[in-house]
Length: 256
Ligand code: ADE
Image (cartoon, rainbow, N blue to C red; front, side):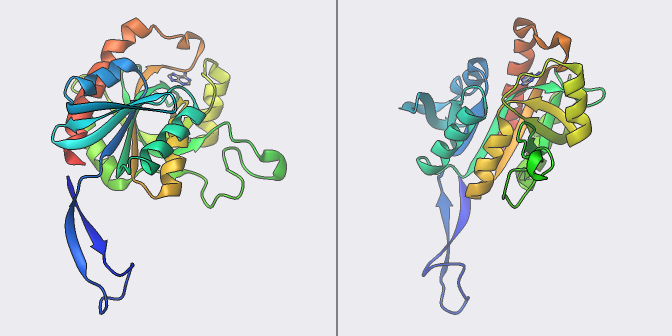
């Protein structure tokens, strides 16, 4: 639960004619995960759970470590991710969105198992360069990148410090509707966008949150290095991703 300020008589008002009330908000936290194994981490500790189906998605609502949450696997790619995020916001009025998943590591020294927390996100496959825009810039949008909420980012960094056996980094994550398994492309993503990791959803989740003024944070466990070997061994990596997700959520959600 969280305290929020409600402006009576419309807002933001002049102090003279407004009453300000502090009320307890029970709006849920949206948790978007990539894989059912990561969802299982939430479901195993979800109390008073109910499952709701919308647009082919299964949304699991309940209490997780004392907070109202809705957890969902959005599916792969930016369209799935955007649809899921807008659904969480419009229909379930989530007050924050947390995105957890896996990513290809493209920053120097980043290894499978490490964690990258996004400070900013860009859609690397957005290409309006023939009209003079730089790669990633969305036509007629007032921002190039999407920032994670500073308070959630701090809480995520704190949660990541609990991951005893892996390093964590903070930096840009780029998303596109492409699985990157090419060293040249991965180098370009790092050089062009100064990105540390690439995946296929979070920048579109960030865009939807930006347009709706909903705080957002993204944390990704590195599963591969986006090169020839990126056809990762899911079985080998899965326990690491699941352990990371479990630790991160247990420490992050209570702080939200
Ligand atoms: N998710 C995990 N690894 C990825 C990669 N190499 N490219 C895109 N998305 C990913």
